[in-house]
Length: 67
Image (cartoon, rainbow, N blue to C red):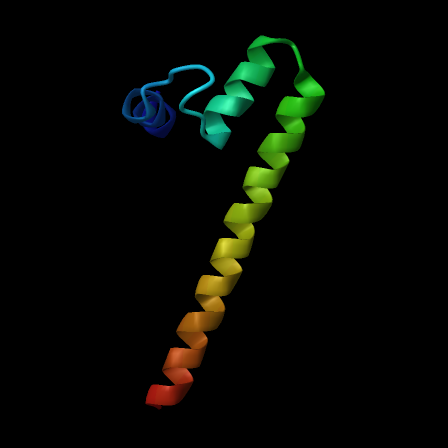
């Protein structure tokens, strides 16, 4: 269960009140809306990739200032 279980427990998983992207993907998947679930999962993956790129750029900029 791992991280997803933690998200489910911490958010309270109250449908319509507490919603995160992983929980939304689960709801879409359980409702057999596979296209919607894949679209949201793809968006979540792109956001993760963008976050890593921005982190890398910031670290390089800080290293260049310190060198």
